[in-house]
Length: 167
Image 1: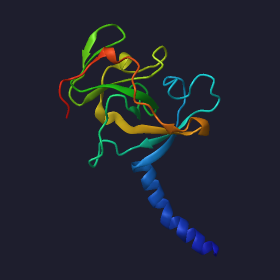
Image 2 (image 1 turned 60 degrees about the horizontal axis):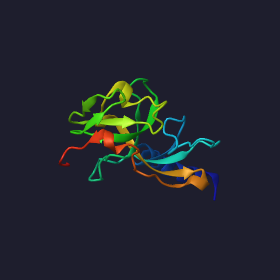
Image 3 (image 1 turned 60 degrees about the vertical axis):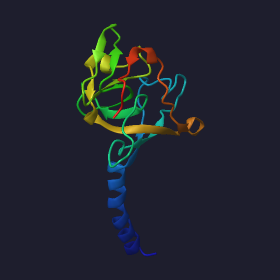
């Protein structure tokens, strides 16, 4: 294959690959311990790499649910991406870390890190608009010994009072 043909093939595929990465799936690196032990467990020397599904909630795909691990831009630090677990959705009531009941308004959700001692999350900045969520984290793809689907089990379900119906 000549260099010209190779460059032509790359030029044809590259825009499709970039569009796919920007709009459908992406691979992300988990930095920091706020989602430990689910992601970046203690003692792990390798940061987890995860598959991020960006179409969740669009085009008839299943929307976001309690227990989903999601990616979004930090409400407190512009340009910084954070990974948290979706704990409560619109209409739910949650008991925050101060022991107060908080009602989740329409179009909002409550997110928390699994490592509650160090996580900066909705306990710090309150409920966030669902529109801030960019993707759902579906599985760990690296390191290979931890690769697999992520568990949606939440550690402390007693803190959430769910609405009696769903959308």
